[in-house]
Image (tube, rainbow, N blue to C red):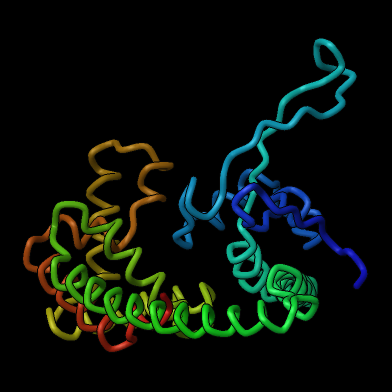
Length: 254
């Protein structure tokens, strides 16, 4: 298979991709930092889905002829989902490539064809036991996840709700479904509350402008800010997120 993007494995057998190399392959016109920040908004977390790296690059205008730039080591799952989010032919090509790379890597790790018949027999027994244990853990995870959903409260509601919506999106094929599900939840909130988040957001931004709040801050204000400022809306929103998380079966993606 022709190498399109370098994929390296770390000491934990996790396959990693350079964010900058992926950005270059995808031919994204948006500057890397701005693009990566936007991708991170889909729920990817540092030290979970990626790590930050300092990279030295040649630069004649800098002292010593080099300068540092930030890069990111993405796990392969993140790289696949980021590629899919692009909704371009290059994105599709990258995602299919990563799937094939992952498949070949797993085959290398699990190749037992050269084992003796005795070891192959023991390996088969081990695989059967491992499968049973994984199924038990899957059921335990399902119970734990349902408990987490029910426990969703107002302490760190934005982060927790975003995490659940990300998991819902995964059950629908990836992070590309995030905005669709979030919009569906907003519509249901408007219906139940008998209000309009769009109008409330406009009113909030107008009030902020009248109070002299900088335009950059006003521009970043969103519907979640409206929800957070109204106790009743927040209670309804969290109830809907819980219902939708159970509806989409977020534990199935574990």
